[in-house]
Length: 81
Image (tube, rainbow, N blue to C red):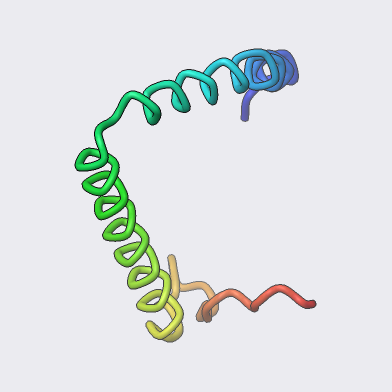
């Protein structure tokens, strides 16, 4: 488990460098040709579909086998709304 100092450092770094990284990404996006942008969009659509497939497969997998002879573990309960 990271120390409180490490967590505070990470939070500070995220607040400090997040906007810088977002601006750099925006500049790279603006510099792309329309073909590059479309290729990037296709890549992200493929990654999204693969992620959805993994989540769906994990949901439909059923109960997991016991670990070290412990009780059987089912899939996690969905969050209450």
